[in-house]
Amino acid sequence: MPDQRSLPVPDGLEGERLDAALARLFGFSRTRAAELIVGGDVLVDGSPAGKSDRVSAGSWLDVTIPPPVAAPMPVAEPVPGMTILYEDDDVVVVNKPIGVAAHPSVGWTGPTVIGGLLGTGHRVSTSGAAERQGIVHRLDANTTGCMVVAKSERAYTLLKRAFKERTVEKRYHALVQGHMDPLRGTIDAPIDRHPSGDGRWAVVAGGKDSVTHYDTLEAFRSASLLDIRLETGRTHQIRVHMSTMRHPCVGDLQYGADPTLSARLGLSRQWLHAVMLAFEHPSTGEWVTFNADYPADLAHALDVIADS
Picture 1: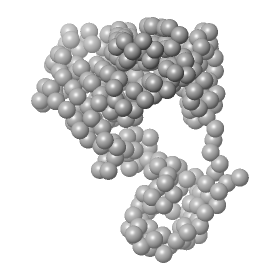
Picture 2 (picture 1 turned 45 degrees about the vertical axis):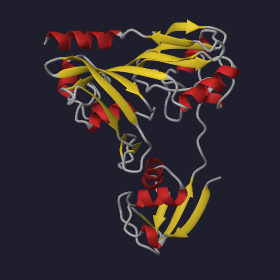
Picture 3 (picture 1 turned 30 degrees about the vertical axis):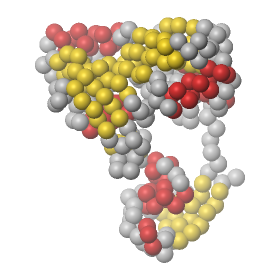
Picture 4 (picture 1 turned 180 degrees about the horizontal axis):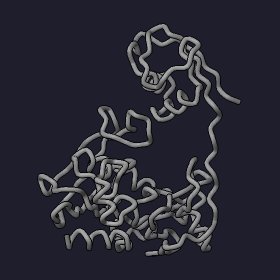
């Protein structure tokens, strides 16, 4: 059953956007608040309102919160192009292809890493939510490269802790527009959901701490190939930080990339690849390192821009 809530706007929220006020009052994300408003589930003094409308202290809010939609369960079927880089009784490391999410989620109907492993007979840990068992970290659906999945319960616990404590080394290569200044540096800028509520993320005051270290590997006429090390692991972190520096990942139209350049290189997604993953093995304690080659679309785009 829907959750019905009614309350007045407190004095401290006078003049706030409606979506921001709802987020603060109910602990929603701004995106979730915007969805409720657009869906007609929020009334201000008995009438519908826009997400950007400003609220007045004392105005009455009537909010209908639909019951949560359960994430779908993984579909166990092979994922074309997903290769196994390493496997033992504790972990399996894959080179994730384009268009594959880590696990099922509301709104995602495409292939998943977990479904691909199950569909080819690989055992995974039973720890974690039912739709994401064994998943200890994620890559964007259109970001390719190294990803580790836990097979044993011990591995799940220790790897989750390692990612939380930032003892895992994650390196990416990104082709970005223009040239970084300086050529090597650190971007330390907090990230949260974009105020527009459109699914993007952004550098936002008060957001979660987000630190990206980069080094220019090669500079071309219109772009630069970067080696990137993440100190934190926020959603879309590299894409947001590069866009904020006015050097978006080539092909990343969601974050401001030049569509003409993307088309010339034949890219349908951001040029971003998780090239290396290293961590302490959960059973042996040995420091293990895995590398993933560029997929065909990124290798082709790099060849084209190097020759231009």
